[in-house]
Image (cartoon, rainbow, N blue to C red; front, side):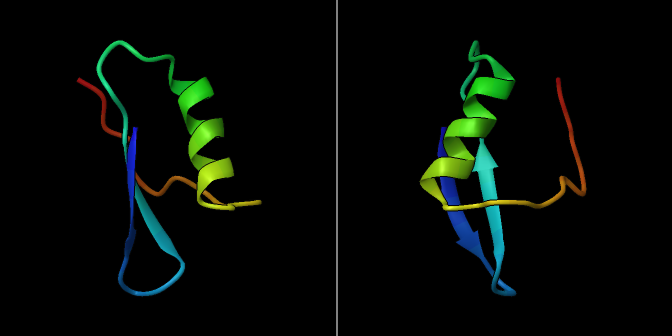
Length: 46
């Protein structure tokens, strides 16, 4: 999992690794980036 702060502020981009469990990785990303609540405006899966 990789994450990066985006502009405008208060936006974070997260890239999930292939083969990882999405919900576990999402929880890890929220803890790493100190996100307490939010929404996913777009979800693309291949």
